[in-house]
Image (cartoon, rainbow over all chains, first blue to last red; front, side, top):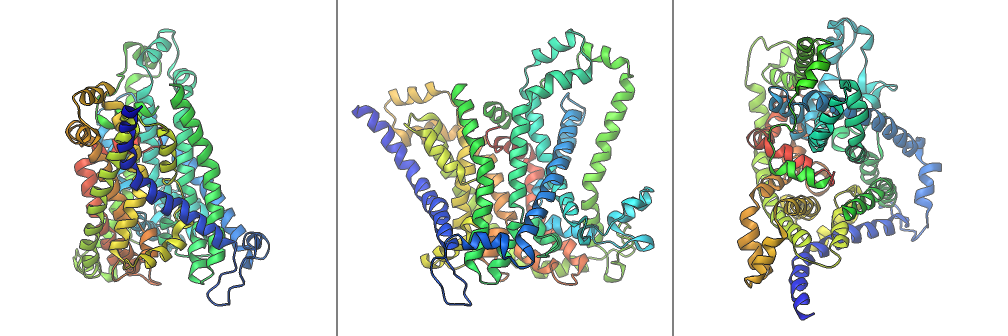
Length: 298
Length: 303
């Protein structure tokens, strides 16, 4: 007993600064934000104390121009286009590279490099590329589409009410599709070679090999790729701020929090952030539990 | 799953597990193996062009002069190459460029050491409830920072830390603990055998001694991953920066946004600025990219 205690006591001492810091700066501050979200705290008017869930319900009922609901819709569009695009490209790249292609390292490095660039810097160039005129005056992406004879794809991009939010997903896909590729490549490399050989021995075609043998093995990878991209999508702030600025048209909850804070309405900003946190937790917590269970079993 | 991912991280550029086998060729022969291969390379090269296109525009635009900057002709090379926009961007960004190093380097080093110690204790030291502690730490990785941002500002001013680089160093170290712990935990779990720790313990070494003499010398690949990861995320961060600093004392993303986010921005200078801002992380990526890729796989939430 003494001996065991001696063993775990120093371990706890190593962990305790981290645990303490995270207890205060993650759990404590979240509690503080929840507390704030239940009050009426706006710098411009005297505090009215606790108001219960009003700040939350107001977001859905009394919000000016339904801004919150609008930002949720935007986030929905962005998430679907971003995840769809990043997954499609990422899986395609991984399939093209997984069997060992000459120059694999080069292709992999190129597809991944946008991830090393900050969202703010990539926002600068995408803003420029998607800010181009139309028709004879076309530039940027529109010029490319015209040049390829795809003039019908020409668009006003992020300033178009119908396409603005989907357009915002283009730079996000550019930056993160390579990440999805990296996940799937690791997944492919984790599949035992014998499995593939056995399937080919049984005379299965390349298509059947992927459809019935390899892809089913990658379900856990696909799940984590979905979770990670979904999680990135919900938190997306820098990119949207640097492509379009704080515009109503392309506003998402993560940006709305910041805008609300600028008007000094801390309680309302707190309520939006807590809703955002709940949404993220609904995705992440079940996943963490699942991963823990799988790890215990193995 | 995590095991495979970190294994990939520790030896990032191993040769692929499978090469096309004879039987592959037999089934592919129906379509024409050569044609299939050519098509595959054509598609791969096509995507290289697409992915690099924005970089091309960044570079050529940054060398153009004011009159050449227009909506049309974005894809053309400059008629008169000029460094004017680079000079202008450097005037606006130079100071924050160096300031950001003084942010990103300490963050990378300190959070890596904390992560290494935590990861060791959680994976290779028999600690009851290690899973619970680990999950509590890991959750910090996923929270949207907006959910802590408002009170964080108050805590920072209560602690008396002046807003700016110092605040950002503290904040990035704290919120970097989860990812660094995760990477090292997975790394040690796959590369350091438990017997090694047992042996060291039988020799009478305590935790600190074991960590210093047995674990740290084995940790270099893990450190490369966390240092790249933390350097890049501290360098590229914008959200903490916008809350906890300003254009005069903040990191380079803030300065770049001030340069590029104006109502009618100077596009050539913005492009030069974006390149200056991206240079350090791109250099890190080019020099250490093989580990960066491994790190992405390891950092992927335990696969």
